[in-house]
Image 1 (cartoon, rainbow, N blue to C red):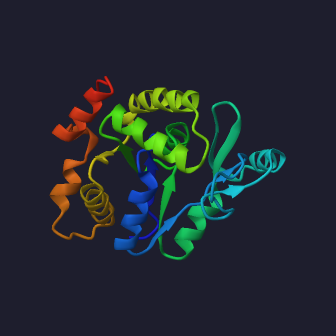
Image 2: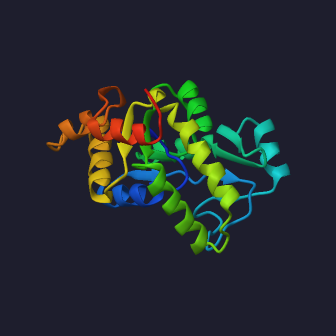
Image 3: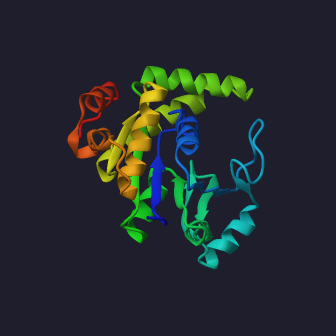
Length: 222
């Protein structure tokens, strides 16, 4: 069944992009939505690859024309948004769409597209998340302890909304997390491959042991 919208959310530094790219290499017919943003490119980011980088005035004109499936401001500075045309184009090509958005945007999409499949990816602990954030910041040449602290605090706030998502994946081991997301996609498509139990174990309401351990590390109770 083509045209499924998969909402993917995760705290910054959770390894979401690596995980999503791995799944796309294993499952055919998955398009990745490239969001729009008004922030400047970082490091080696390219326009049209990681994001469509546009001016604030252009973004606001798109808002006025109701061209976004969702949009949000992050840290009160920059806009991020997903054009409705991304889902329409995926459906025209008989593909499903992976939508990488933060919790604020995800909740908007859940309201507008209630049949969407929501997946939350979380790191196993604050310590590992901080390490990943520092490594990424150093690679981008812009280490800032204040930004890292702010992102750690934001991660805890986002985890409080985990119960709004259908599935949760703990990205502690990339191969396991990749297999879990693949199983979820195939299950939602109605393409059984023998991993239905794997997908079911990731249901947020199941509260798997791995999920509960990770949440406890962040002092989050669901």
